[in-house]
Amino acid sequence: MASNRKTVIVTGASQGIGAGVVKAFLARGYDVVGTARSATKSKELSASEHLALIDGDIGQFDTAQKVAELAIKKFGSIDAVVANAGIFLVKPFTEYTADDFRALVSTNLDGFIYITQLAVKQMQVQKRGGSIVSISAALADNPIAGQPASLPMITKGGLNAVITSLASEYAKEHIRFNAVAPGAVDSPLHAEDSEDSLRTLSPMGTISSVEEIASAVVYLTEARQITGEVLHVDGGAHVGKW
Image 1 (cartoon, rainbow, N blue to C red):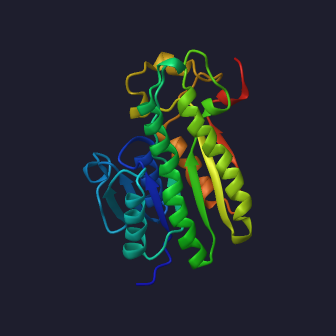
Image 2: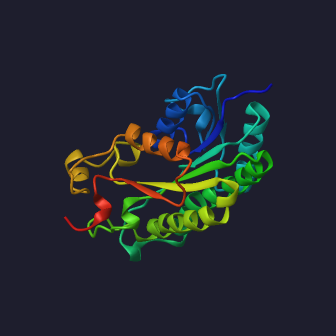
Image 3: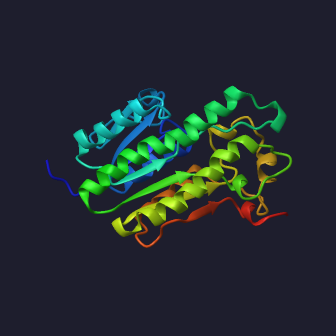
């Protein structure tokens, strides 16, 4: 059935930023496919006429393929992707293991690559452009000695680099690539961190809400003249020492 609604795929959708992004797009009249390892068991989301939930590890190509196929079968298009799925491990560099690194690459990089490849191919068929937004991190631009995250930042810095390359590669087809780089966010990722400690991670001494990150994602998705941009939502953390 023909529809004027656009379809967005959101990875890592079961909680936190991902669930907030899903809610933001639903509120703006999008059809949404949300995926995560336990998307169908989400306490924040329930499947509906305009929201399809599918379980799986987005770091596996088979999962990405099932997600893309569901979007096309149920809603008829793929117009945007929010590559939100990610893992974050803070520890000294010498304590990271090979398994840590493989897990980071699988979720943070493979999880971006596979679904984005499939989405771009579908956008090329549709011939009306599209948007890919990845979730990076303020720490990729301004490390904090007290929060060592060198290996995760290999992956987040890689996302910043690839969106610049892809923005150029697909500009003539109006397929746009951008990233949102959060600092400290009031989300399950930081559930064990004290509010006082989180406030020290930005010069403004503030903590972003999930809704603020979701608003930035929606903005980049709909901003037709913006591509290759990393939008920092971090209370100024990326600007340097404070």
